[in-house]
Length: 133
Image 1 (cartoon, rainbow, N blue to C red):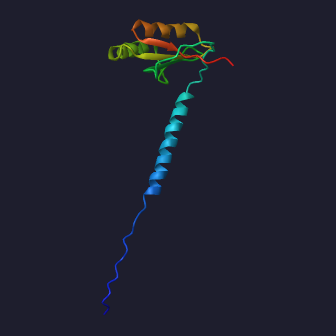
Image 2 (image 1 turned 90 degrees about the vertical axis):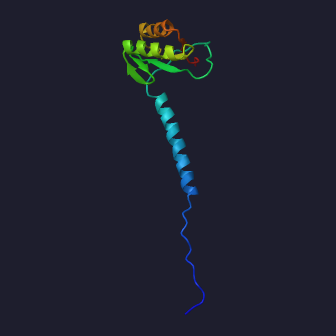
Image 3 (image 1 turned 180 degrees about the vertical axis):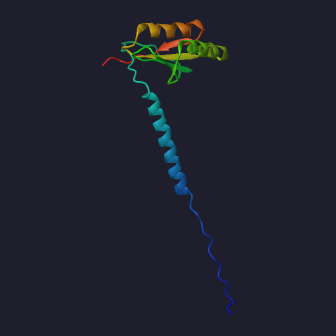
């Protein structure tokens, strides 16, 4: 009989590499989600020499594509539904800024309709343009 008692080493799981990998995956997914959102609509804003600068990120983004279809935050929306959404947003925050992204080949009537709808409810419209090349 031995007087020395051997103790078993406790198994340890090193979780630091796992955390590192998870952080990298989260950043990757966040970046991919942002790029996908930016390219979800094939809209090319019109070129302008001068443009107004906004005071930060807009509260809402409305898109107008080449065919005149309207998109609220990347999802297609009808005109009556857009008016309702704008009215609800104006009730929550009357000083909210709305970014309007219209394609340079889009129908002028659709873009003017969106500008009019946003202005009618008292929100601040801002039209996105790009610098000429």
